[in-house]
Image (cartoon, rainbow, N blue to C red):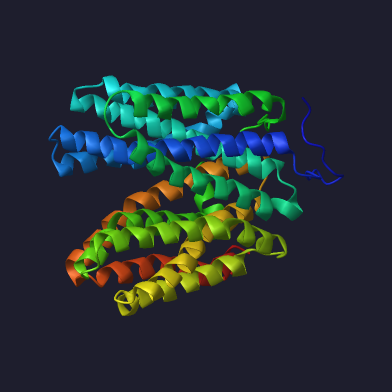
Length: 394
């Protein structure tokens, strides 16, 4: 199977659907597996009487694994090929996911968490590199919007599967492992179209974090706000005397906004020569939306409306940031930058819950909104400061 056709400038001319299906299948399987696995593993440990602190420590291995796996991914893809590395990562993730059922000793869950999330991180990085490399420049936003929508659908289907399968027996583990393994089929079919990394990146891994700060800072803010917000919003709402079902429904509405805005934002970004103003605008809206939460928390309908649009705003930082990355780089540089992109996302998922939780302890319940606003404001400051650094370098 041949590589996607390119024009005289080396740009892909049209959407190549086998590549799109392979990358979206991989990321959808990852989304479903994580959405199913996170509540499943926590419930099982709770039933075994493991203290909450130790459950949280075990869950934190996901972020550690992601940060350590990211710098290695490009090297493995260069040595073994993108498609082969993805298939290997799928097999490791499936075996690790099934291994949780057989691992009775709690200490065994730490290496399993590490291998599972390390493998899924590689799938994130390489699927994003593949789809970014194969997307036509004028339709990159649309393609990445489809990709991000499928990821969001995967995350939504995971908890739905958990609610139907429960936490007893091997069935939920077997279903999760089976879903991951199914992603091998489209990747194997499209293996001839997978991007080739003939050369290694010229720069050190951490250089790519600062090479395209508009993208990497955006995904850091996305990781912090999404992980911290989802983890602590229910606590914030309950402390404001909101019934638990109402709080859970608000999170669902925010998730719907996440799915609904991916493709429209991608289409809008395709019409822009420079995607950075769109990223800046979404961050500003993020600050405004976060600061409005304390004033709207007792009006459920207004909260629902704000969170629907705010959820789309948050998710747009990921989609448009990834499109901006793909527009700036190509080849081994893009692969390394995608790894740095996911590394920054992982750092955000660790910093978000810690920072927001600390803000709530120090400043009271309103600290939830202030901390969310601070993460968005960080991106606003990066955007405003970027021209200053550029002028110094020039």
